[in-house]
Length: 109
Image (tube, rainbow, N blue to C red; front, side, top):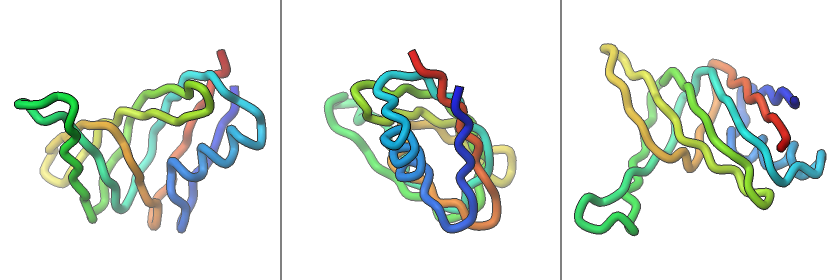
């Protein structure tokens, strides 16, 4: 298992990609937890599931997620906790850390 820490000023997907390339990890499972300050997630269009609807959030969010690395590509689905106990969910395209941290646990397959 590899633990990746994403800290202030870093972007989550970029950091994971950099570390897995350095370690030559091409197939793995991912578990992720932390807090972020902005992100972009997508969900599918209910009329055409092949189309993604991307939404950006620029606010502090709690982050929990699972994912995979397949052929060296990072794929994460995330649950994001918003002020007021609201939950958001979707495919994570990017997430930036400013005031918090994110821990990513990569288990190579």
